[in-house]
Amino acid sequence: MIQEPHSNGDSALGSATATPFAPVPEQGLVRQIAFVPLDQGDEHSVLRFPAAVGRQAIVVPPGASNATDAAKAGKSHVDLTVLTIASGGHDQVIDRISDGAYPGNQHSGGGNGGYAVNGGNGGGVPMQAGQTDGATRQRETLKQMREWVEAELPPGSIPSLAMTFQGTQIFWAAGRLAIYAVPERLESVFKAMVEVSFYELELREMEQQLGASWSDLDEDIPLAFEVGERDLRMTEQLRSRFQQIVRLRARLARLSPQVHTPHVHPPTLASQVSERLRERTRMLHRYEQLDEQLSVFDQVYEMCGQRSSDFVQARKGHLLEWFIIILLVAQTLLYGFEFLTGMGQ
Image 1: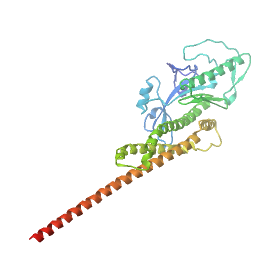
Image 2 (image 1 turned 180 degrees about the horizontal axis):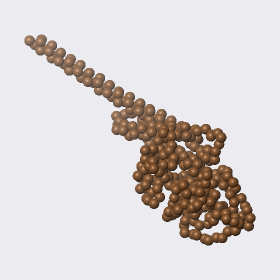
Image 3 (image 1 turned 60 degrees about the vertical axis):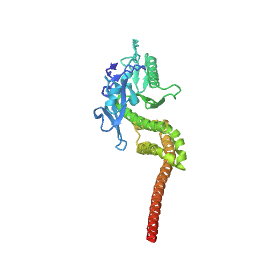
Image 4 (image 1 turned 180 degrees about the vertical axis):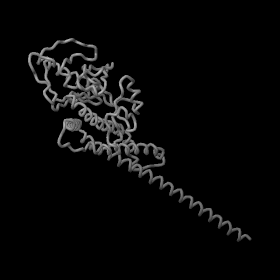
């Protein structure tokens, strides 16, 4: 279902696509993000990463198949789904959700439903007779946002991360993000969170890929000590695994400037939420752990390559030696035959 943006100052952020698997607040705008190469999907680009990374974030257009739209942009799936709600217009009636429940409510306290915006921080402050209802609705909306973020988490997963800055509420989980902020700060916070979510996704994918390679490493460790004739059939496999590790190493190195980025001075709301998410997801520690683990893979496969190369070179040397020996034997036999023939004459 496609919902048109409401007059909450967020109409420039795109259409709201209500997903059928989780309730979405009425004025929530849902955007599905795919991370694609820089030369694809430029018309839907919302954020371009550094040239060394070579990726950009695009919005998968609403109204068509997500898989199809992502595939056109070089992706087979959507990487991040983002729910944004502008708090300035959201302090009105927030009870209707996208699952079909539309309770009608009348509110007292003036045009804002008995709830006032607290200046630049987007937080509500109680007013008069209808103030309690407004605060309750805000809490209910934030609860819905968190439930929406956690709707697709696998059983047993850790709950979503919650962050609060200057009235801005953020809920984050792997693949899902919800932002509640004043309209003038919503877009900057959105881009900052998408950027950090991409770097976290890169680390997570590398962790999964490397984690699945430990069994291969255990299988290949003996070849780091000695390679025999029967082991040469594994040369292509070793080459493929070594190239995979090198690609992971290069991929990790491209993230280094982004993971080790210094704090921004003077700080902004976008920079603060970005830095906090980096800390909460332990990006720096995970980067260092990946670097240490890759060092083990580097060492093992470097030794495997060296042993394999030494064996091939030694075998070639042995073949050349045997060829020379055969030539010397043949020459000796020829000289002996000529000598015996000469003596008979």
